Length: 245
Ligand SMILES: [Zn+2]
Ligand SMILES: [Zn+2]
Ligand SMILES: [Zn+2]
Image 1 (spheres, protein in one colour):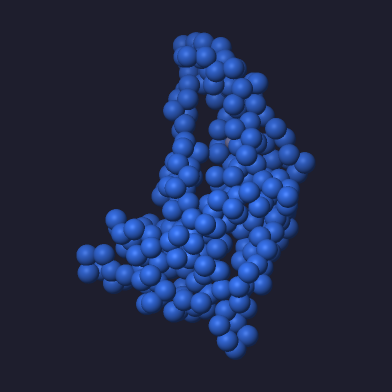
Image 2 (cartoon, protein in one colour):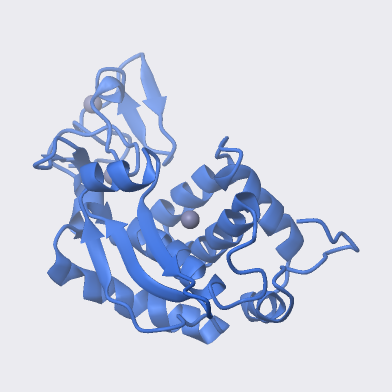
């Protein structure tokens, strides 16, 4: 268990050599080299909040991420019930009802590539876009699951906005990452802050650069205003006269 000044993993008082991790927790040198949680990247072990779980597919997960993890289809509904009303309150609605399905990491990697955590399939059969599939990878804590769900709901919503189907990948993913960030800010807490930091420093030229560009254009404008702008013009709108994006 965590004691004041003790290692967050093993509970011992750190010796001469110790580390402070990205959550601001202190770890002894040995524990700082332990296997990391696939979701929050925290070193795992011990019997406290960093206790290690090994999932069936080999992924390592800390106790904090495990506590609210979405591992089964029956657990999807409780996070959908948090994310959907938030996005509705901002004006984001899906073009048609669609069931949110879980997908195994291996299967998602085959369909969407290594770094994807979700998948939305939209069909444009000569008319307005229609969402035919929305999947989120299993095994994520609710905070991260909600981020991915909000991102994917962003794609689904964009299917009926101006520019649908022709928006370049960087702009499209940037808007969806921005929608995901709204959930994280609403959710709050250290885990949400961690995922926000990861998005802000993501080196990916599509997701990371797209998010930073979208966030710059969004500026301090409240989400409903940004949603309205995209619904009308297909764009976030220019902050400071900047109309690029
Ligand atoms: Zn330790
Ligand atoms: Zn974790
Ligand atoms: Zn996306």
